[in-house]
Length: 391
Image (cartoon, rainbow, N blue to C red; front, side, top):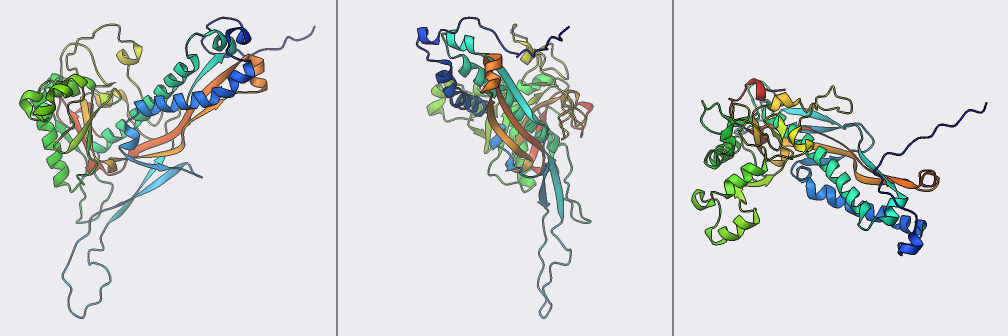
């Protein structure tokens, strides 16, 4: 008895229809496929670029011919008066101290979809463009989350540069609200947020961190809480207050710190927001309902023992009180072995499955560099508590 061959089934949405390219004016299968890669590449890159903000806010390097990249730290040095007749052979303290940081590249990150040629023929809308944007969104989300975790990690670290008599500054954790406050709802109090910003700016100044490239990332509700109080907090030119309020982009900066909003920052053990009753680890925001699983269940274990992760990004429980980041570009580093790119099947594979598998991919890794450049905002618990201890 002849053995029946097994077949692999492509995974993807099925929209139904028939191959009526000639009748619908969509061209032949080959003519349509000739444009697939070009159209998909552009849409995927747009989706990625419009949804990632962290990539340009940290130190980024391209990794070639290796699995990791070394970054060199140089501590501060001293000055001294010259003694006439004495040879100049470097300062007596033998500074500056130097340390090395290695950032590994995590495994290949992919997002893919199968597009059935029949569906492409009959669809009355841009099916491929919509799928490509969603693939770009998925890659961007993961990219930002890893970098923001690395910055949070930086804020909890001592400097990697150590030398007897020369202690370099490390990261900082700033409490939003009173030191003895045990409610996470302080994270949404605009006055307390502003105080935390000025405190963070002073800390960065005191640690000698450059004022150039300082940024903050808050969740959307925090960002809008600041905008709603621009009439009294003096954060915006009153001449443009009306337009700024309506556009939702009213806050440009506080204390020289440019502000961004993102749903990808670690926030009270989740990402972007957290719903439920107010407590020490919950700001007390009522769920609007129907928020979807990508928001409601946004927890993620990204510790180094997770398959595919080669850097330590921590577990969700380690961000129980985190509610924002303020940092400078040198706080974290990112290495890219494969930047956001696209691959599409063709030829015999497309004939066998009567469709294309479209793949977006990237390979990157992130970790902290200079902890002194990172400040984590916390609410509901003091620095060093179990929800925001070093890891």
